[in-house]
Length: 132
Image (cartoon, rainbow, N blue to C red):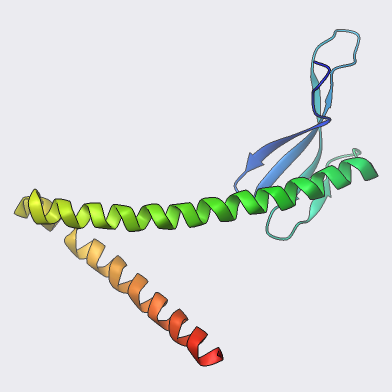
């Protein structure tokens, strides 16, 4: 128990609930008290109730936000690379094994999504070229 962190971050959709961890109580049980809620996009830290993060805790929260943003961005890029692989595997499956009924189940939705994605990518690439 000696190497427990002072703060615990319960990840939420757009941030985390931050808890102060206390293992030094009479019952020798872990006690977690919510001290703040963090918004990843804005970096906003909202204290909870009468619990106000100390300066050291605030520094730890800020460091967590930076690290979490990096993790999210890495995962986003990995998801995009996996999507490319999945599209290639889907093309191979459609070409070699899909039945007409299976293709009819998803073709229109997939084609519209691919068209939308292509349109957005082409527009963004064109915008990037025009800025150069």
